[in-house]
Length: 130
Ligand SMILES: [Zn+2]
Image 1 (cartoon, helix red, strand yellow):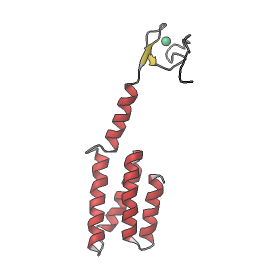
Image 2 (image 1 turned 45 degrees about the horizontal axis):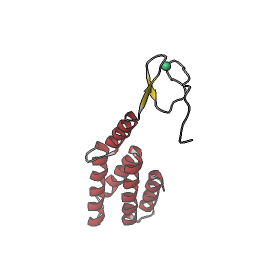
Image 3 (image 1 turned 90 degrees about the vertical axis):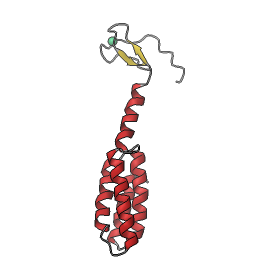
Image 4 (image 1 turned 180 degrees about the horizontal axis):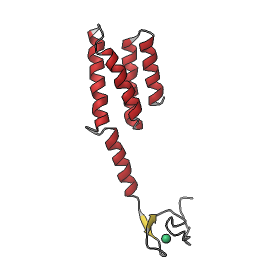
């Protein structure tokens, strides 16, 4: 299930008067959001928690407060949050091997068949993986 689906489930539980079930769904949604890098889902969870922090059931209120700060931390990128996941993804793309176009001397992806700068077609298309 995707993060946004789980957020929807959590808000449904809340609307139907099941705050505890709503929170446990929201925790799962938070984990999925982190995995998927879905910042919008995290913001939706925080908004939902804000409605619950004043809940008369203290366990619900505390849980909501905890989840809200967890999501906030994740959004801020503390301890490997959404933003730093994005940076890691960007870095790993940068680390992909490059080849230099013999025509324009620009660096292009190792597996490129055509130079994206000048349109040069690489003659050696011996790709062992295809
Ligand atoms: Zn080129």
